[in-house]
Image 1: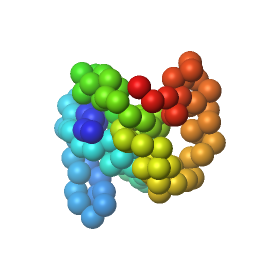
Image 2 (image 1 turned 30 degrees about the horizontal axis):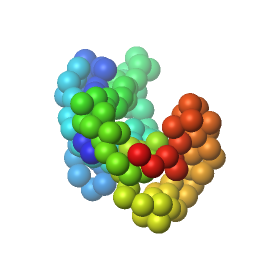
Image 3 (image 1 turned 180 degrees about the vertical axis):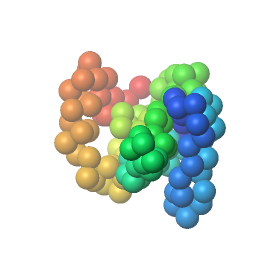
Image 4 (image 1 turned 45 degrees about the vertical axis):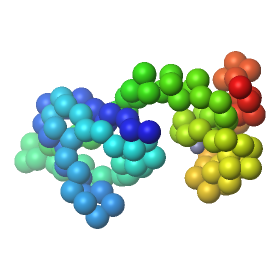
Length: 125
Ligand SMILES: [Zn+2]
């Protein structure tokens, strides 16, 4: 699913990301896949400091979900991955996904599960 990546700074934000130049306009947004957006936000970029020692290119990006799309997805039958909102038809597909994508986030997954108010990964609707 696509999400919006917002730039909360007045200046355009540009970064070389996955071999391509990505620019998020100042106080604007671009759309991209959730996994890509998450990895864009998690990449560390060296701060550019101007002559006065101020950071001239702060990275003030945040992800916003398209709520309609997200709700529609949550209403689909199947297993929803709480970590990234992908939907899977069966537990085997979900398991493969978790191992491939979230293998290094297993602890996070348990935290998310604990906060999910009974609506956990294994709920089939
Ligand atoms: Zn996932």
